[in-house]
Image: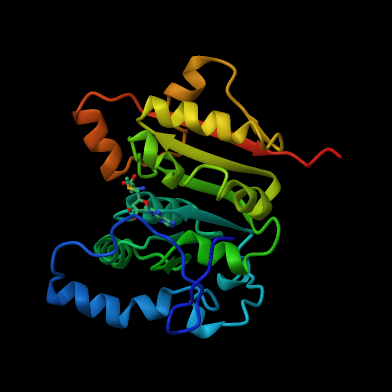
Length: 244
Ligand SMILES: C[S@@+](CC[C@H](N)C(=O)[O-])C[C@H]1O[C@@H](n2cnc3c(N)ncnc32)[C@H](O)[C@@H]1O
């Protein structure tokens, strides 16, 4: 798995190329991270809480939830919070290692009056560690980091490193959503996903990937892409059973 070293808390070392910290946090953000985040963190995902990596039931984290959905790299949390508000009967699990984004999301969460979101301030791979097969009915990867240089393409979230786990934790009949404004990321994702025929691309016409999903709340990154004249692409894959 390429996890050769260990961190001090015993967690495996994992290469992570994104940013974890940005501008100095304001006192109100520090307070939210200290007080609200522990209440919203999905139990059993942080290494220190579950070093044996026992399986965790995400759906049961929200009383009465009919399904669990996962958002990977939620940025400032606009999509996560809107989705949680629109779907109160779904356990919405989000993860984001960039702490300034997490602070923004907590702020949005506080103003939205929702009770069905859980926020992991860390890497999606820590969620994969403890998620059961088919744990998530829908998985959203909205505007993953583009890593435009070809020598950095291996860092892209959608690729051979993460697709086996994305396939495993996506429920049969569930959906994987990928939004990106980078045509080369589309090409790269299609090529990588072709090796996972259990992910069936649903598009039949160009409009199917040019138009946002019907329940799509835009994100900060998308607004910037639109201002700069880039075309969003919305890719949807249905998780079919693996045919032997
Ligand atoms: C370009 S930003 C998009 C943020 C947001 N989805 C949006 O559309 O505004 C990509 C995000 O993915 C996050 N990310 C990168 N690698 C990740 C990982 N392994 N697990 C979870 N999030 C990750 C980054 O920290 C970053 O915030």
